[in-house]
Length: 195
Image 1 (spheres, rainbow, N blue to C red):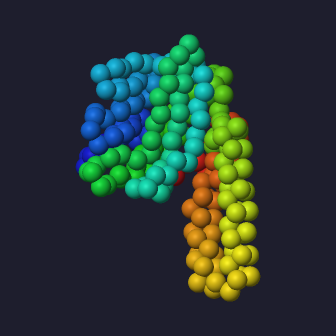
Image 2 (image 1 turned 60 degrees about the vertical axis):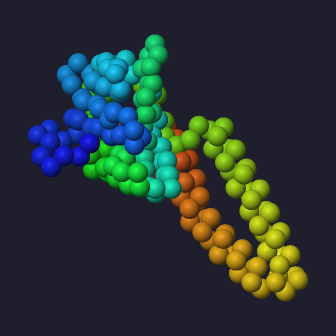
């Protein structure tokens, strides 16, 4: 949670509220590893024991610039870290700088510990392929409707379809472009998947 006092060690601590009700999810990068406290549970994951990190872009209706990091540990355990936090029933606040600093420092410490974690970005390849198929099917259907409205002289309908298509490309196109499946290295984090 953001505070008015500056963090003496930027990038070492991060907290967010995943929902309006419920406690904050708190993380700290310590000498022993990633210390976490989620609800009533807590623990420390050694940097070398982390099995995977997946970065993705996950906008929601109340926050268009929302990023997510999914962390998993060898032997079990998983949790997400979001770049936004709930403040009120109608406000989800971005924490871009704090999130970016924390994720970059986490990767640096994992590399320093010799982690063999699988580093991926975007959506899972099968989910991404399904999303592409849905977008193509919708584009074909909209093109058919546009041709039909032009052929029958329904200019208002054609204009509506063109406007809707532009909005769709702007909204969904950014999501698809940023979430293209990829693998990355500790020293080359994907810029499109960090705020």
